[in-house]
Length: 74
Image (cartoon, rainbow, N blue to C red; front, top):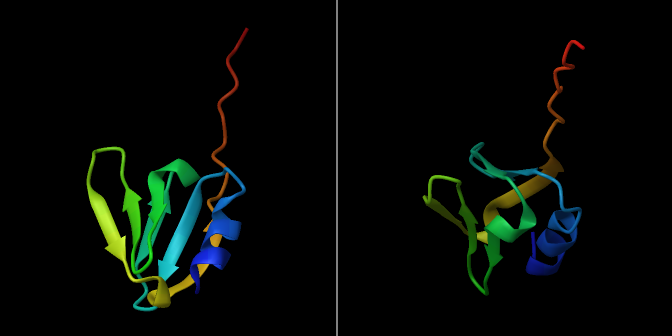
C-alpha cells in the first residue's frame, strides 16, 4: 500500500485495524496515533510502545468493530 492510500483509509477518524502481509494486526485507536513517514508507518499504543511497519507490507486497513455500550438502569 502506498502512503496516500494509508492516509485516506485512516482519515475516517475511527479506530482502525492495520493488517500486515505476515498476518499480524495493529490497532490504531485514532489516526493521530499513526505516523506515516517516507519509509515507515509507526503506530503508537496507549502504553507508549511503538510498532514500526514497512508500508509495502500493509495489506488492509479496516475500521475496528464498534464496541457495545451498556445501558444503565434508571
